[in-house]
Image (cartoon, rainbow, N blue to C red; front, top):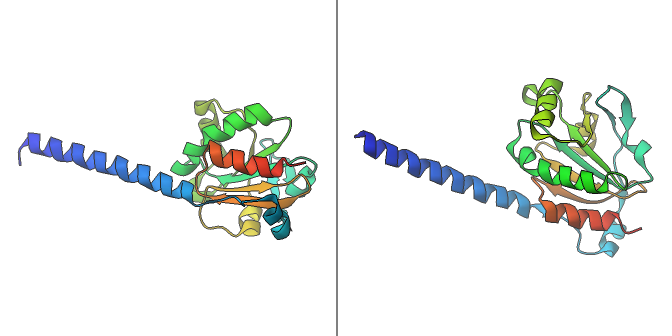
Length: 184
């Protein structure tokens, strides 16, 4: 097989991989769940499972300690491609709403070798300013019973689960969830 044919096949395979990744990403976005109405939210409301996480300084924080402001809770890892894609949307929302809402980007430290060093490098390289929290004891993983991520929960100021999204979110999904938890 000539070098020219190999090069053409390489380009075709690369284009196919990019196309497959694009469609896979869009399929993940289609898996987001946002209730159609506030009535549905109130009817199905349950308290968000409580868990302990650590902030960047190692201080323990319980989710229930944050009641009083709406919460967007996101479980992620820096090695997760879908998590990386959605990070810019969380950063934009944090910069816009940091005083009005808690955005909890909870890193799954220890998953696939994830370390605080990896997270610190990720945050520096992306120039991200949102605070990072760590699920060091896997309390969040156990409380929310999930096997894949990213995973995002929208929680009212009173601590009730309102909506969730499995897979990467975009600005539209974040806005829809935010609209539901900012009703008061």
